[in-house]
Length: 327
Image (cartoon, rainbow, N blue to C red; front, side, top):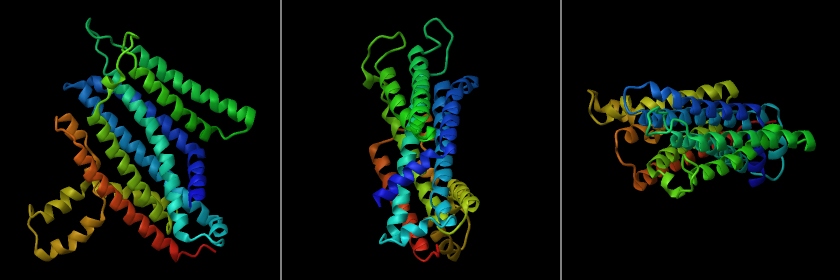
């Protein structure tokens, strides 16, 4: 199972779309700094909201595009037959594929998170005398991390023949982490400071919740890809995501008795509401911008919900793949 997971992780980060989505997400996070300056409210609160929205969208695109093809392509090309014909149980194939996708998503999402934290450190530029408009350490360390990752990947590809995309992603994880540590150890004037002063527990809890939503959608994609093709799996992921965003408003209000409806209607709606992932649980940007504190208890409760939903969808994927004809 872990061999399958390792191969699935390498296959995921080697796809060019993985690197393209990472670069596009990082560019969008950087552009958010300028976009947040055109608001009439607190610019830095809007920057947090925009950053979490970008993380949510880019993470979901990464999950859908990565998990969709990791199993569908092997089924369509009949290469999975080589694995299941060996003494390898089918549940191990499904679980291994998901673990590999989760590892790849962890690397990609961490890189996006570092870019988000660097933009929060930079803040929205203000051109008065008391505030330095440009955070030089953020710009220097950020650009240096990206340039170093590209250089290492290009050198490894040219000298050793290693795949560019996978080497670039691995190098970017390391260089971005080093850049974040370096920025947190220096203030805007290049003076040493306590790195713990830059730590914001509220923001990190919100980021962790978004990451759990990404892992959940990856499980949905794995389950759908056992029976559907790539395009249909993407449509299923988009449908589950959109339905999960509005399920609380339509179905939750009906079950709570806030809207008129017969009792038998509520009995029919309840299974749909319970089975559909509620994406609102993972969105904490409104709480941050409105000053509502996020606690470890909130994180633990949502984490248990995410783990239960992931286990349910992976179990569904195992059941669907168990009787799938791959010959």
